[in-house]
Image (tube, rainbow, N blue to C red; front, top):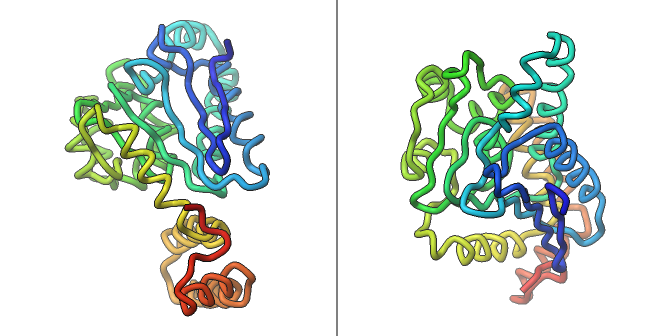
Length: 259
């Protein structure tokens, strides 16, 4: 069986890490398969949301030990190319044009936390744990840092990167890494509820919202006003926006809404 499985149920795709015997740890194959999955899903017609999950008791334990052992014998250039593959995969997840929801159980460490941070929304079981353990191996969470720092801010990133200390799901929620935390038995229901909420929105508007947040966060200066004005004008004049407003005025569901 492939280390990454992709399934589709109507407007919802599910991408599953399928290496429970090693707690769904990353290696070159997993990184390449995740990149292929998100590239293939990118242009699928009718797709509205992607759920990202791990099989078994752990979401993702970070780097595979065998992979790390091999990397220790590679040259700096070989390690650079390997790290760039991980960075590129995370960017595919972060810039995916549809909402990505991470379903998190057990724990996430190192690169596994990076995968969660790259997702738009992460829902975790209350007993999940998180840690950036790279420093305890003499390494740094370099490739995942853009997404983690965006979610939790530089002060907490500095603390957790430097100590490698584990944090609870409650703390991860308080820091902004997680969207929701729920009892383990309610995890699937919480993910389903979030997916239903996403399906109430306009798909073009949601894609625009993802780009909007990235652009405004990168440049909050007055120069961004031209971009934001142009964006809302395009959405208002577009078919999806017109249908949404008309449906609201007529007190009915818009045609693109999934119920």
